[in-house]
Amino acid sequence: MSWQRPDGRQPNQLRPVNFELNFTRFSAGSVVIECGETKVLCTASIEDRVPRFLLGSGQGWLTAEYRMLPSATQERQRRELLKLSGRTQEIQRLIGRSLRSCIDLQQLGERSITIDCDVLQADAGTRTASITGGYVALGLAVNKLIKQGELIQSPLRFPVAAISVGLIEGEAFLDLNYPEDSKADIDFNVVMTENLDLIEVQGTAEENSFTRSQLNDILDLAEIGIKELVSLQNKVLNEV
Ligand code: CDP
Image (cartoon, rainbow, N blue to C red; front, side, top):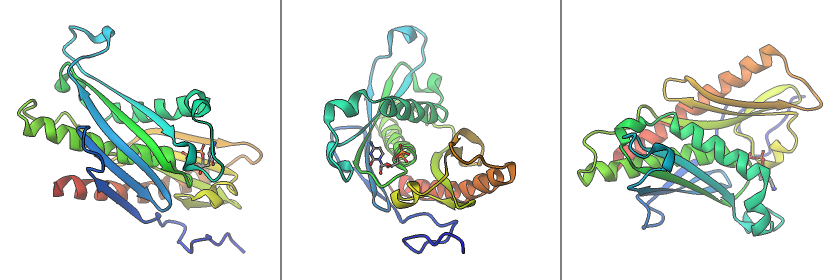
């Protein structure tokens, strides 16, 4: 018998997704994304300066920081260790690369955007939720620049979203929660554009390898998830 999902979802079904816009008020863009029990606060802050290596280039920069809160997981984690962990570094680089892919830095001009992703509650898929929510925070920040007359047109080239897919007992499932993530043999994180072009794919097998045909199943499920996520991103960004 195949794996029965603990929350009764179909293999190709996302967890319920919710965006709470303008959760905090001091950054240019702020949203809490909820994917089931995973909750991440994503903010976009803008500064009118660029890192030294870009001074005088006319182009802007986008970077991302990611952190779990100590109480985001079932067992409390120490704040100072969370900051230094290799996992944190890896994830924030992934978020930065993913969101840089969708912005024309020349059009942004000599400004820096920092996307901060703070995990309030972790139930797997925190890096993918950070990318999907980070894009919404970025969209809100860009809208603000346009509204204030600082930009004439949007430097955003296309929406970007991300989702996890895992293999459990050889079968592919979309958007794993933590009980599933801990059972999965293979865990993928897929970043795609609105047109389903790939930005980045992370996928690792340890004990069990996977086949080309399973990889195709994984990417097919990812496409289903990304289509839904991008349509939700577009909806919330068009409503404001
Ligand atoms: O969160 P994401 O799936 O992007 O990353 P992961 O490293 O594959 O972690 C999966 C999940 O394991 C997290 O979302 C947390 O629920 C849990 N986890 C944890 O409880 N403590 C950690 N130090 C790391 C992960």
